[in-house]
Every structure is written in structure tokens, then in C-alpha cells.
Image (cartoon, rainbow, N blue to C red; front, side, top):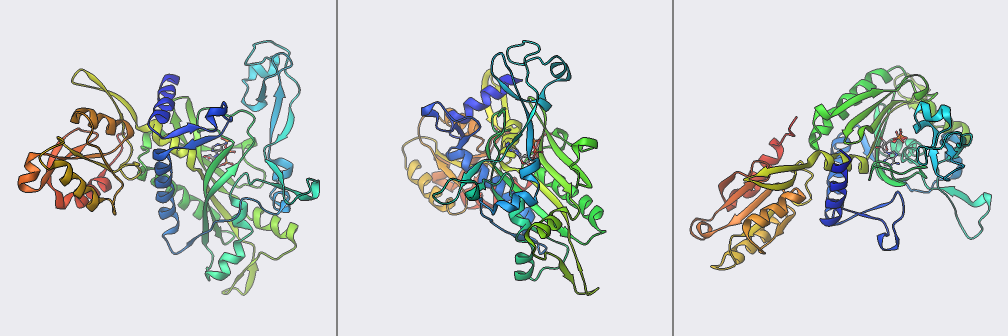
Length: 443
Ligand code: ATP
């Protein structure tokens, strides 16, 4: 199965989805660049999330800064607790997270890289926050952190947003943005990186109603995955129990996706009680209570959080979409991305480069382009052009042929079934919209 990942990584580079960061200098571990197609896919995933989460009356959007007051991270517990247990191999000098070693490796102090036994150091707590300085003097008083999660920017703005938007409990604040974690080991392509993007929503509720809202958001989030083409059969819930559950959390469930290398978390849904707002009250000395007009009392709101990695989710959609198929004795590679998130929605292809077909095709591109990202290609045999589009996941190919010159119809080729239908050029937009809405991932 690792083979699939290798093929995917190479396709992503070759076709402009994902590049290794600073590759000409040998790359920087745990950082990746999104190429022309990757950036479109990422934007589409974020847009789908943003619409689902904020196009409603009870959720507001926010874009907080990446650098926050350092006290924020003391209040949140990150300065003290956002650590992984780091062990070193005295033999080959490799470094690992102790909690990711097998029990046998841990007991024998065995290095998973060089295989020597009794060579691992004791674990020490390694804080994952990247540190930097504000202003010209690099001393402790100027130290700030690159945020390791977007959530804290939301908590510190709770009352600002509530007052400005005249929101009443329950209501939520949603945010998409970069987060940074100095992970000890980065691995599995985009799965664990040092710089990534999160899409988080904190939903503030009246104390006593957390359980009901927790169930509600679990259901909402589960349904969302179908909108980006991840089928239910490849997803499962993982409940945090015992040590896994943060000390303040009342309940936590992860959504996991079945990657080629095993099940991995893509989203966490947490019932956090009133921990966050009470901590920020304590550390800032400012009141963050909500005034309930009905009871005329002040309450500290409780929080239900949904936190998903945009980059990890993007990788899940790529893994899910990648297929190798045999068609008439030839192999075709096809990315069955949901048309809603596919970077290019349709390709416009003149069958041949004469008889006015390229001109007609160009005219169609001009008509479609304000509404859809379309791609024009007149180079090479039509079959080859279809394959190039299959490989990047373009759901529809529109071909201009001699009949187009007579009656204004084109062929609309479906990426998944390869079926071709004749459609009036004037109906294309509607037809593509209808097909996109009706598209469902194979189970
Ligand atoms: P993990 O246990 O995998 O390190 P986590 O439980 O620390 O993840 P959260 O703090 O709950 O993760 O973060 C929420 C989401 O952010 C995760 O579900 C994941 O999609 C994403 N995420 C977290 N760390 C990374 C990372 N290093 N690279 C890419 N995405 C990440």
C-alpha cells in the first residue's frame, strides 16, 4: 500500500498539486507547497467547509492573527502541557516520540531505525510550539509563539464577536488559518507536517446543554464529508477514553479516515466544558461572562469544538480519488475527486485544429470561464487529452466537433464512466451543476 502513496506523491508533483518546500535546496522537512492545482483543491475544500459552517445565523466568521499575546498560551495550558515525550537513540542519534514506539521497543529501549537494544534515552517533554521574538531584542520578555492551533484567537475574541453581532447563546465562531507545530517526526506526506492549515469552529452554549450540542455537531460534521467525496465506509469514529481525554474535556471523538498506512485522525470534536473561557478570565483578569437577559444572570459559556486539518483532509481526498484502471487493454490513472472540489471543472477541447473548431471552443471558454474554472487544450490526439484530464481529476470534458458547427451541440464526457452525451452548448452550465450536485462517491 505504501506503493500507492509513492505514486500519489509523484503524480502530485508532476501535475502541479504539491511540491516539497524549498526543493532546490534539498527541501525543508515537514513543509509542503501547493502548486496551481493543489491551491485550487485546498481553496475548494475550505470554501465547502466555510459555507457549511458560517452560512447560518448562529455562526460568525473570524480571522485572528497568528501571533498572540504570550499569556494566551499560558492560559490555554500550551506552555506547560503542549509537549511530546522525546527520546533519542544513543547509537544512531535518531529522535522519536516515545508514545509512537511499540510496547516491545519501549521495554527493550530498542531503536526502530538502527535496531540496537538498550540505546534509547529517558523521555523528556519537548514543547511543540515554535518560538520567535517581537521587536529587535531577542530576550525572554519579547518571546512569542507561532500559534499551534487557531482556537485561542477565537476564545479571546468571544465577547467582541458576541457584542458586535448581537449574538445570543448558543452561537459559534469559525476560523480557517495556518497553525504551526514543531513535530518531532514528520511523516506520511501531508498527514503530519510542521506548518498546516486548520478549520475550527467553537460553539458557545449555555451550561447544561453541552451534551445535546455535542451530539448535534457530531452529526453535522459526519454529514459534511460526503460533500467533499469521502464515503462513509472509509470513515469511523474514535472515542477518547482514559488518558487520551484531556483533563478538562468532558468528551472527545475523532473522525478517522482509512489512509493506505492505516486509520488516521482528520478531525476532533470536543466537549470542552467552560475550561477555555474561565482560564482566559483568570489569566487576563477580564470578565468573559455572558449576560443572560432571561435569567438576568452572568454565565460562563461552555464550548463544543470542531477542529479539522485542511491539509490532512485534502490528502484524504487525494488518496480516496486515486485509481488505476484498465480501459481497452490500456491503463488509465484517474482522480475521482468530487466535482465540487476538483480544481478544474471542465476542459474544452476542439476535436481537430481546423474548420473553425478552435475558434468555437475559445468562444465557449469565454462564456464558461466567469462561472467555472475551465481549461482549454487543443494539443494532441483527443484520447490523450482525455487521459491528461482524468489524471488531474477534471470531471467533465467538452468536445467541439463537426456536429457542433451545424447544430450547436457538444459532447460532454464524464470522467468516471467515460460516457459521452450530446448536450446543447447553451445548457452546459446547468447540466454540469446538476451532475455536480448529484455526484456521490463510490462506497
Ligand atoms: P495528532 O494526534 O495526529 O497529532 P492532534 O490530536 O494533536 O493530532 P488536534 O490538536 O486535535 O490534533 O488538531 C486538530 C486537527 O488538526 C487534526 O485532526 C488534524 O487534522 C490537524 N493537525 C494536527 N496536527 C497536524 C499536523 N502536524 N499536520 C497536519 N495536520 C495536523
